[in-house]
Amino acid sequence: MARSRAACQGPGEFRTYNNHNTNAKLIVQSNFLFSIGQSTYPGFADSFGAIPSSFTPDAIMLRYGGQIRKVGGANVALDTNQGIFLGTGGGVIRSYDGNGAPNNSGTFEIPGTISGAGSLQLNVAGDAVYGPIVVLSGSNTYSGGTTIPTGTVFARNTAGSATGSGSVTVTGGTLGGDGILGGPVAVQSAALSPGYAYNTGPEPEVVQSIAKLTLTNGLNLSSAGIVSWQLGALSTANPGTDFDQVQLTGGNLTLGGTSVLAIGFTNTATAPDPGEPFWQQNHQWQVIKFGGGGSITGNFSSITGTNGITTGKFSTTTDAAGVNLVYAVPVPPAAITSMTVVSGPGAGQVTISYSGGGGTQFVLMRTNALSGSVPSRQGWARVATNSGTPASFTITAGSAPAAFYYIKSE
Image (cartoon, rainbow, N blue to C red; front, side, top):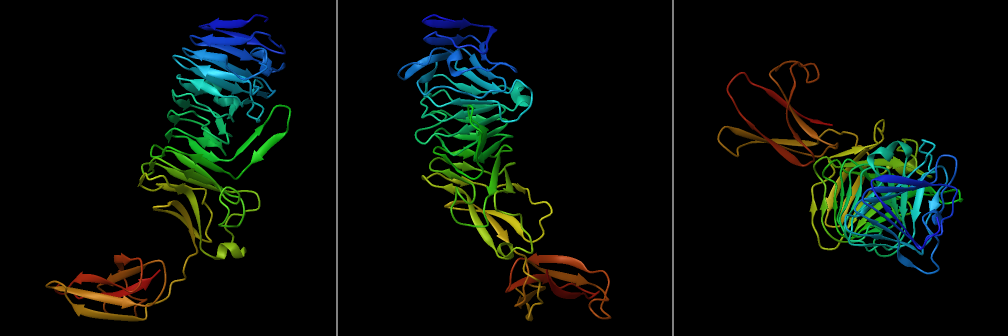
């Protein structure tokens, strides 16, 4: 293809492979699909057109739903001089392995700047089976917003925003990396995962399992959003190096709903094991670092990845500084050391106060069996529970039959 400008009007598809085109610019519009590569033959950066000698913001223009797609087993990285301009109606960037196997060979890297007022969609639902990976490493300025319905998108930029200034909505797949996201991010039935793993051009796989992903304008996880968090070393120091962290420097953080924290262990970190001294102590990690003056709503509704772990218990807490993952070693229960019974505070009530002992909770037990040793009596019922000591229980004193009470440490 040799011309100063190539314009593709949809609907329809044009596919080029094992070919170097010389058109100066490429315009794809009206839902047309421009594909490079196939399962046997590769595509190249200049399959979209000649590589400009200097940065060209509209070397590739997408508008009215125009699509570009990388296909086949070879990874493709555009040149930094190949800018992408999103016009009215926006565009779609897709990537997948034409061999039909998600083996990290479906990588499409966009290192140049994406600009314009249009929106950007990364992959389409039908690409999911091919394991599409799109890497955004430029400081992008487009303002129409970003949607990610499937696949994996890595933000690898070091300045600006990988996803421009508009909102980011992830409804499937994974949004990860170690870069910066500038607009408000909503993750719905999908995952936010610091770190990356992909093949790059002819290079072998590049991997950074543990990373810090920065969001500058808010995060909403309340609609089944998942934060995929990994511990990379037996340490509570060095976020982004020893453990994953999402850093929120502005906007609000919304959890609650059906939000999930999925935890895992990688590199030199091992899952909790009673034989490992590190796991014999309590620990805490700041999973989400919060700042910028917004507010935090709710907490993670559940934690996954802990099945089979009995050495300790994981939970999450929130404070003004963010969201913490807490690991607590169970405290062996110990009997209380003192107990007093007084009337009140109301008519017909009795207050049972206790102190000493140890455990995760203290349970007031009751039975109507009045004879025999405490362990041999039948009909015990749990009446009330406290989480600490010293504390007290209040009961209502009724008529016969009389009852027997004791406080059990658990």
